Length: 270
Image 1 (cartoon, rainbow, N blue to C red):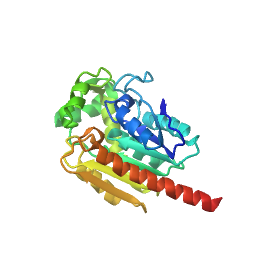
Image 2: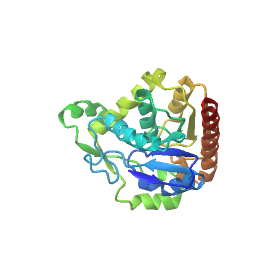
Image 3: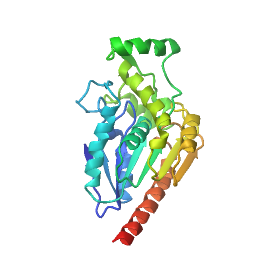
C-alpha cells in the first residue's frame, strides 16, 4: 500500500486503479491532488502491478478486490479527516461494489469512466466458452486486446504503456466471469448503494466502457447528491487526456465543497 502525504491535509483520497494497470501509473494524479491539499492512499489490486498475493491477471473472486480496498479505507480513516473514494474504470466498479456491501463513514465517491458496461470484450464464441472453462480451467488466460491508443489520445502515455512491463496483457477466464458478474450486481443491487455524494466523470468518446450503461446506472441511482460530467472527444482515461487539468478542477471542486460541508456538520455536532 502507498500513501502520499501533504501538510495540513483537507481530506484523504483512496485511489482505486483500473484493470490491467497499477497505482504507479497515477504519479501525476497523486501529485496533483497532494498539491491541492489531499493525502492519497492507493495500492495495487490483487493480480496487478507488483502485487504478489495472486497469480497475475487472475482472481478467484471479485471480493478479493473489495477486501484489499477495505484495508486501504481502514488506513485512510485513521486520519480522522473527510475520506473519499476515487475509482477509475474497473476501479470504479470496485468502488461501487465496495459501497454496496460495506457501510463506512465515506464523504463521497468519484467514479471515472466506471466499468459498468463494456464495449470491448471477447468474441461471442469465446464468451460462451468462458462458462465451462470457468469451471474446468479458471486460470486459463487469454490476451486482453486493449491497445493504448484506445485508452488516451496522449501519445507520450501511449508509448509509456507499450513499454511498461507491469501493465497486464493477459487475464484469466475466472477474472472475466467475475468482472461480468460484478457489473450485473452493481445494477441489481443499486438500492444498496448508500446515500452519499457521487460524482461520475465520463469521456464521450470512450472506446472501452459503454457510456450509455454508465449513464443508465447514474440515472437509476437514488441518492440526494449526484453529479454527472462528460467531456467531448475524450477517450477512456480522462486523467491522461489533454483535458486532464479540467478534470482535476471538477474533482477538486467536488472534494473541497464536501470537505467544507463535513467541517460545518462536525462543528454543529461539537
